[in-house]
Amino acid sequence: MSSSAIIVPLDHQVTSSVADVNPTELWAQTPQGGKTPSVGTVRTFYNTPPNKVTAISSLGDKFASKAPDAKKELLRKSVGSAVKQLKAIDGVKDVAIDASVDPQAAAVAAHLALYKFSLKTAPPSRFNPNLKEPIPEKLNFSPIQASKEWDRGVIYANSQNFARTLMELPANMMTPTKFTERVKAEFAGLKNVEIIVRDEAWAAEKNMNVFLSVTQGTSEPAKIMEIHYKGAPSKDAQPLAFVGKGITFDSGGISLKPGAGMKLMRGDMGGAATVVGAALAIAKLQLPVNLVVVTPLTENMPGPSATKPGDIFYAMNGKSVEVDNTDAEGRLVLSDAIYYTSTEYKPHTLIDVATLTGQVPASVLSDMSCLNSFPFRSAMCVALGEVFSGVFSTSDTLWEQLRVAGETEYDRFWRMPLEEDFGPQIHSSNADLQNTGGKDAGACTAALFLKPFAHGIEAEDGQEPTLKWAHIDIAGSMEATRATPYLETGMTGRPVRALVEFVRNISK
Image (cartoon, rainbow, N blue to C red; front, side):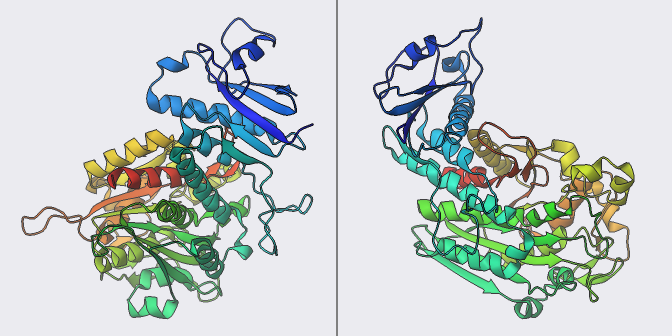
């Protein structure tokens, strides 16, 4: 059998030939039901055309009448379903895709659907960090008609896959130090990029005491990594900023998590992974913006010097913070990082991304006694599940820009309330702020905790705010427990594509 294959998404209301294939005629040769096949229904034909495999995948009923964003998603499902069928066929290597409906969406679907993380040794894993030579992908994709949109989609997908890999690698293979090394290697050779790695001594000089409070229980050195990309016509133009939570393993600290499913906490650096992935795509695309990315990186462990519940620290902005529960560490590392970024680089927009309030395994959530033990952790998962990422923002304009980008890439957001009425839940302690506010509105109180550290969001001296800020909680969307047509189960790398699309839109 030939190693070549063709994927053709089929609109059942349109008759046309593609690469010597008439998909409508071929489909008609297969058993037919009483209604149009659902999207992602695939028919595979061998030696058609000669020496090739052809996978024809349905776009569903009345495709032409759908809205533009809906068409993109239907195409992703169609192409992804076909890729999953072809990657199960031994010998197939080179796959040409009819991407004429939407080249970017087709490229995204193909490369996301191909990804499947594993460190099994048979067959050898391309994710093994000890490889001397890279192992090629199982399938090579190309569009039947080349286009810049296809190339852009490849970058979108591969950058999301890079974030997935960072999140999937176990904590012994993805310490703060190894995270920075892996990122520097991935960005090597890209124009207009500088990467700076800070250590704990530097953080202490900056009075980042709330961040350092989380580092006290681990023997792994903490890091703060900065990525500076200067793609704007003026290198001095005001930048956009991303901040990503980078807890490379979260045991909960002294407030120890239940053991069941704790291995999922290797992905608690999903915020850092996704902002880095987005920055990778932005740099590869050479988008005309200046971007600063800051990722506070540490483990959260119950060592002999670990922070204890009730301890109080003074943050970089001078506010006192009581650590009510050491398993609410994400907002602690983010707070100093957000304040540092907003004051040091004075961005016009700052977006932080974090697995902040919900990554307790399902086996734990099903036990209500455990849920009551970790009341603040279930908030975003319960509210939005795996479907949406929650957005808290002080700017209606920024929210709308994020919403539009998320709908385009079907990497969707849902706006959540950021109201001072939740304040008493985190202000009623011996410090200015308490890092938990109880079970009720847990995601909202977590976001409200971060707000005082986003310097510039409040109007001063009759002037407009100088900073637009959004906090994105990906605790639910970080992992797919159910496969989709173009995403296997596992870490998702969301919202990389939505962030890149957002930046591409505002840079036009």
